[in-house]
Each structure stands twice: as structure tokens, then as C-alpha cells.
Image 1: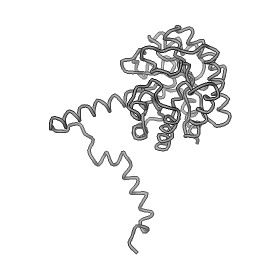
Image 2: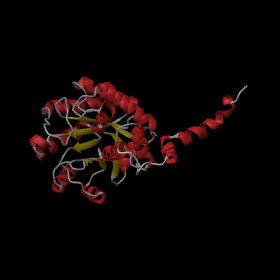
Image 3: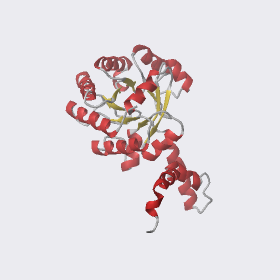
Length: 288
């Protein structure tokens, strides 16, 4: 099946799809090795990883599409790409959607923030007017007709305009043809339930450790009605914490505790698979 078809199959089931988010090809590979059925290329984490800068609209469309392509090439599970605001007007949104489809993504997220966008759990967010927000999703759905990909429509209107406005926007996104709905940063479990009860189709929750949305259990999220639970910073926070500790040990000439052993590291990166596959062509490496 194609990546969009695999994602559709996951969403067709009556279950919560737990989705750790990746930031590069290696983190995506480890998510697949961990037994998860899908991943999301977190814009926050990808910006930090690729350019060492915060997720404040600094990465260009070309850089983001290239990162998505590398991630999709490394895994067989469906990847959802972060298309931000679409990088311009409605015609740019169309190009963004086609670019993510051709990179191999199963879905692309388009949101209604003012450009340059901000992380959904940081200060200073603002959203465009309804007409522009709807034009973005209309353009994304139109582009889906050229290249098969699912549209994940996001609204950040809860922050400054309230939950009712956010739900109203998401309802229109669904009417326009969005496949997955994402109301960012509800602040209570009651608000999360209201979102799921009011909106049709699959909904996504975004669980940022220390963010505005409650960190509910998987069972609670499933009971509320979410189809996807995204964890955008869990892997990056864990990796940065581990690197910070290892750097301190190295600086202090202390034993490096907590490192993955070399054999496991090689296996997870893919050395063993490479050597096994290359045995088919061993004769070409022999001296003549």
C-alpha cells in the first residue's frame, strides 16, 4: 500500500494511534523499530535538529521538504509532514501539499497561524482571518487531487479567540474536505472532550510535556475520542538530556554511563541489514 493508504487503514480502526514525532531519518527509524505505526515530522524538533534554531518560521519550504524526503526514505511507516502555514498564499499551499506528497508523506498538516508561525505552546501566537484560513484548506484539498495525500487541518484559534471559534473553524475544515482535524492547545480534559464530541472524523491530540494541554493517559485519550496522540518533543527532549549528561561526563573525564552499546547502535542504524544484503553481491568485491 502507499503511505496514504497505510495511514487510512490505521485511522479506520477504533483505536488510539500513539505517534512519537521524529526530527530526522534516524529518529524516525527508531520510532519504527520501537513498534509504532506512524510518525510525524515535528517542525519544532526538525528546526532544532537541522538548523539549530527555534520553530519560528526560520526553516524554508525547501529545507522542510528535504527533511521530509529523507525521513520518508528511511522508514516504511506513514509519515505526516509539517507544512506549517503553506509558505505563502493559497497557490503556495498547493505547491507545499504536492511537494510533501512527492516526498513520500502520508499526510501533510496545514494550519491557520499568521506567518511566520510559532510553536503551538509558546507565547505570541496569532491566527489569520477565517476566509484566509479556509482558503488554505480549500487549496490543500484541491492539491490532494493531483497527488494522493491526506490533509491534516490545524487551528490555533483557541489561544486568542476561544474554543468555540476553534471548533467552528475545524468544522469548516472538515466540510471543505480535510481528512484529520487538529484543534491545538485545549487547556482541560473537558475542552478536549468537547472538541471530539463536536467534530467529525479523526481528531489529533498534541501532547507536549509541560505544555498547555493535559498529559492524559492513552486510555483517557482514546475514551475522549482521539484517533491520534502526537508526542512532538518526547524524543528530542530525551536525546538532548542524554547528550547533555554525556557531554558533562566527557568534560569531567567521568565514566560515560547510559550509552547504547556499540553492537546495538550499529544494528539500529542499519549496518547488519546492509552487510546481509551486500552478501548477494560478494563476488563483485573479490580480487580478479
